[in-house]
Image: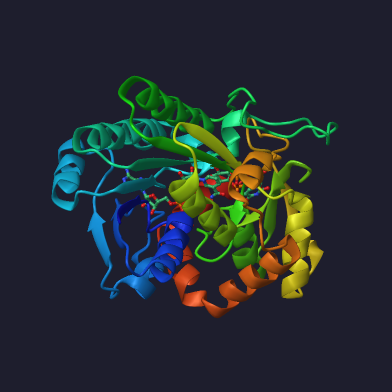
Length: 339
Ligand code: NAD
Ligand code: TDX
């Protein structure tokens, strides 16, 4: 089987490439990535020399380029991770989110129609459902929860999901969609909560917690997400949406305090800063469908996953120090100075 993995130089796509290359040495992986600020060739370094791996630099929204690639590679399966993925950036600059997340998805779907594939899988997010109130712990997102987005990022991801389902219904493109909760683990770009807090704590810099830190996220270790996508691609039903998450809800403040504990750093580093506009209160996934149909359950508990993650950042300082020493400094200034 030949699989095009888009966005494979990013956090989850990179972990997915590692997972698939090791698990299925007989399959071929072609990684297509634009190498935006979030893409990193060092993430792919461990697989670059594998005979069943190939890297191609390009933009999923570049139609002639994508069509040429499909013509040359003739993929069986496409798994689309490529996206602008950071909510805060979508608030300061929405345009590129519409271009990559919506137009890019549309181009990939057109290429699938034109060249024929056995499966197109769209990696989506729980953020398409909007948020849940903090005082209703009995409520969870199911696949039937209406789409109700809050940020330009989540609106662009929901738009892409609607396009994917439209191509299934109208053109019979064999699609699946997964909607996962917050991931954490190795190769997570340090603008996101957990790696940002690890990097700042290690540098004894303030840890900027938005609002009161009471927002809740449902954390999943990235390898559990990769395993779920692999199962959906191989055994999931065409035309279906699968929620992925593992009942691992934590307030942001809890997460930050856990990171500080793991690193042996003081809670005095915590600094409360102006909240994110439109900040979603709580995400919580009901994973019953993927559990019942595909037997998926998360394997890594948060307590273990966070230890492994902190260890990885300690053992791989060059990977993230390289990132935060460059253009990231300007981003950080813009986002956090005077906040
Ligand atoms: P990321 O920002 O770490 O990586 C995105 C990758 O896509 C980068 O390598 C980037 O270079 C590439 N890319 C961006 N625009 C591109 C374009 N136009 N053409 C080709 N490549 C392009 O993102 P991530 O956190 O790994 O998320 C991957 C996917 O999973 C996204 O679709 C995101 O919406 C979804 N998701 C993420 C989470 C999470 O917690 N991080 C949770 C649920 C779903
Ligand atoms: O400095 C910070 N301080 C802070 O309090 C940052 C970066 C974040 N936060 C809060 C905002 C959120 O409530 O932490 C929470 C997590 O923030 P992010 O890491 O930015 O993730 P989130 O907005 O929840 O979105 C993530 O999960 C769903 C991914 O980035 C998305 O791509 C995915 O779809």
